[in-house]
Every structure is written in C-alpha cells, then in structure tokens.
Image 1 (cartoon, rainbow, N blue to C red):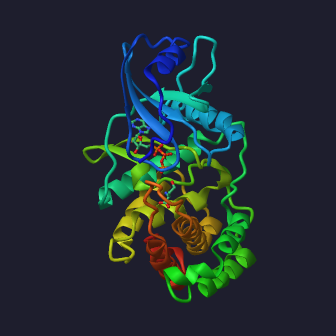
Image 2 (cartoon, protein in one colour):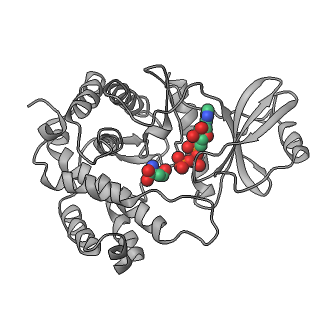
Image 3 (spheres, helix red, strand yellow):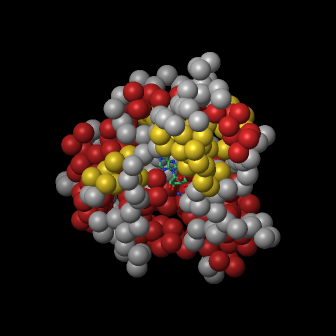
Length: 321
Ligand SMILES: Nc1ncnc2c1ncn2[C@@H]1O[C@H](COP(=O)(O)OP(=O)(O)OP(=O)(O)O)[C@@H](O)[C@H]1O
Ligand SMILES: N[C@@H](CCO)C(=O)O
C-alpha cells in the first residue's frame, strides 16, 4: 500500500483552491509504491497525481526533485511536470505533509520486460542524461559507495539469517568496491532508480518516466549499471545478454560511452547490485510490526551480485568490443 496519510475532501478542496485546476471531481489512493502517499485526482482540468511526501524523503531535497522534473520535461523528456499554484509554487503542505501535484502520464509499467522494452529504456536513459546536462542544481548521492558500509552495519550479522554467509560476502564486496570505485567518469543528473515500475509503456513504446525521488548528481554510467541490473536479468537469476546488448546499443546511439566508462561497467554493475541488496536487506530486517508494506526480496540482488563477481568486461553485458 502507499497511502500512509489520509486526506479529507474539504482540506483537499481548500488545497486545490490555490491552483487553476478547477473543481475537485474525485480522488483515489494509489496502492503501488512504497515511499510516499500517492493519489489520482480528477479535477475539472483533467487527471493529476497528488503526492504527499512521507518520512524517508528529506523535505530539503524536494525543490531539487521538482525543479529537475520541470527541467527535463522542458527539454522534451516525458516525465511528470509539477503543477504550480497561482502564486507560482510547486510545493505546498497538505495534511501536515509536504505535498505536490504533478501531471498524469499515460501508460503502464511492464512486469516482465522484453528485449524491446530494454532497448527503449536504454534510449530514454541516455536522453535523460543529455537533458540533465545543463541542470544547475546539485544533489549528492547519499546511496553511493560511501553510503553502503553504514547500511551493512545496520544489517550486521542478521544478514546471515537471510542467507548463510551473507554478512561475510557483503564485507568482501564492500572492500572491493571501496578500493576500486572509479573516479573521474562523466557525471551529471542520474535517475538512480529506473526500475521497470518507474517506466511506462503504451504498447511497446516507452511513454514516460516517473519517480525521480532518488535522482542525484553522480556517475552517468552508474545509472546504466542500475538499469542493467533492474531490466536485463531473468526471473531464474541469469543475465540475458540480448537484453543487455539492446539496452546498451540504444543508449550508445544517443550518448556513446568512453573507453573508461566501458571498462568500469562490470564494477559499476557490481556496486549497483550491492546497493539494492543492502537497502532491501535493511528493509527486510526492519519491517515495522503491523506494517502493510511488503519488503522487496534481497536474495534477488544477491544472485545478480554473484553474476557481476565473475564478469570481466563490458562484453559480458553485451557491449561489442
Ligand atoms: N505522473 C504519474 N502519472 C501516472 N501515474 C503515476 C504518476 N506518478 C505516480 N503514478 C502511479 O503511482 C504509483 C506510485 O508512484 P511512485 O513510484 O512515484 O511512488 P513511490 O511511493 O515513490 O514508489 P517507489 O516504491 O517506486 O519508490 C506508480 O506505480 C503509478 O501507478
Ligand atoms: N527500486 C528499489 C526500491 C526503491 O524504489 C528496489 O527495487 O529495491
């Protein structure tokens, strides 16, 4: 579920009075997502998404996320556009929470991405990276390599209750990525969480990207590594090199990779798998009693990490020599 905060019709109508969206016709809570409370609202002006930002989002980061969506939409990327009040602000307060309204995007996410979906996402990611190149704001990635050891500490030896030997494996992986994490690769705005549930399709054509709430300034190729992890593995845990090739080729058709980025790809993929293994592990071990949120399975990322440990070059991901 992802409605943590309920909103009364009267307070929502009063909130909407600040916008040029006309009368409120309906408001429905959206079950998907785990971070924030989301509502589909229908007003005289059309359909919109209302988001109430919950505890894991730092309110100080919200101007970055909202300005980024506006910037990217302004450069032709299909992503939610924050709607402004008559006074010109995109961020307000509703039911005691920071809140924003964004445009509704048509389309549906895919559960089992096919090769063609991977290709589409590769192109969209490259376009996002180019569109973000002149975005003036910066936001450090709190979940990059320096943020992983504190997560591992939070899990501690309880990791072994999820898979025997996991605590030691995490320790080994941290040592590798901390010692050799690449510096000096091209940086810019990255989405950092472009999983299939954050990409919409109409048929086989990509129709929009959502959920920019992990976006930050970081290594562009790391964003590719996140996508290779999220899009190109099969349910049995094997890497589908045809999907990898499709994603990388369409990315490179828009933004070719440098030799240094290609060489770093296996390590970036390894780091990205460790990042999602760790956040999932911490969530898995700390489900609040009675919570309706179903944590995501960390083991999926342990399997992916095992693949990356044996990958020796970008060719293992489908990139031509
Ligand atoms: N602009 C939009 N247009 C259409 N639907 C949207 C839009 N934004 C969000 N949604 C719907 O709301 C759901 C949750 O949104 P989102 O993924 O941003 O939430 P979240 O709580 O941040 O989730 P996550 O767990 O992915 O971090 C999406 O799966 C989608 O169904
Ligand atoms: N995409 C993340 C969840 C946070 O959005 C995961 O699958 O672990």
